[in-house]
Amino acid sequence: MNSNLLIMNSSSGRMKDNPDLQEQLTRLPDTTICNLTSEVDLKAVISQAIDQGLKCLISAGGDGTVNAIVNTLMSFDKNDRPVLGILPVGTANDFAGTLDIPDEIDLALGLFQESNLLAVDVISACSARGQQFFANVATGGNSVKVSELITDELKSQWGPFCYARGAIEVLANLESYNINLNYDNQVSQQHSTWSILIANGQTNAGRLRVAPKASPIDGLMDIIIVEDGSFFDAAEIGTDLVLGNFLEHPLVHHRQARKLTFQSRPVLKFSLDGEPIDDLIETFEIIPGAIRMFVGPEMMKLLDSAKQAPLPSPSST
Figure 1 (cartoon, helix red, strand yellow):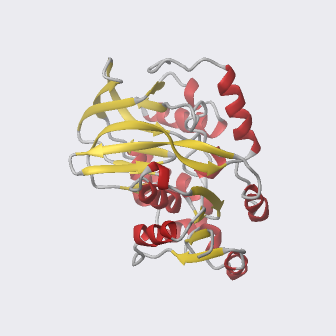
Figure 2: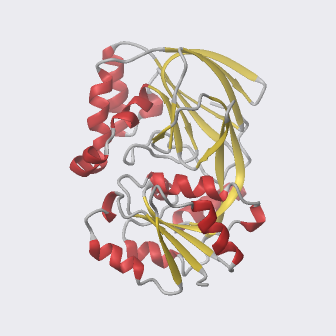
Figure 3: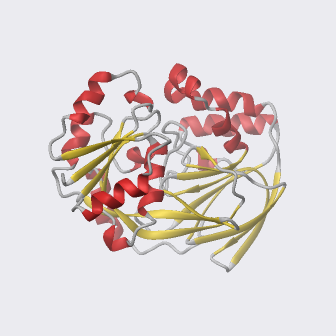
């Protein structure tokens, strides 16, 4: 058995209609290739590879591919999980950006030759039906409607700008949600909101910095609440998001916590790493250091800074 297993989503982002890139990946040394389709039993594939001595699991796709692999890895005992390397060949590659993984494939592959490994947090999303996981961002409310509008055709035509294209349609019919949030079983707050984001990574929807203060190694979730307002408020918030001033808008609130429970009326639906789900999520909780991942040099610098700084208090602004 080869020591590496590459899970390749040939229909995602830059992989689609790019046979040269696909051919490059199939030539990786000491690597077994698994083409990810709806028929693939990912847990069985990874379980067999682990039994045969798997050392490194490589995700070649976008955020949706990373999400599928993270959910599968979390079904294994922590000590059995292989390290995860990400090759950002999807449409947005938001989580790869947070980890400082280069978009250039040769440079991203070069990270696997270095010792830049960090234990990265994962967030658990619990409903009455069970538990799911995500590595980057969960979006709820009007923002999830954007994800529901993003088709493969729209991704192909617009690339990362497909998210902005979808947002234009949502802006015309914004819905308000009354939510009651409880942070770490201590602090409760009520809001009338358009959207809520639960972030482990910093960007979403094509590298938009929705959670610029988030860190996937600090043991905390970043929670962004967008309160409702007028159409002009929505336009301002959208502009601030593009310009990088999102958290400065008076209707946008930022909190950090280890656990978040909430109730909403009407019911909030969520998208986890861009994948809309039907389950009605009731609780989010951080799982510190869940999976070891290859990261870029800027993430290693962040680790050095975190060692020197005190841990922020949960639920702080």
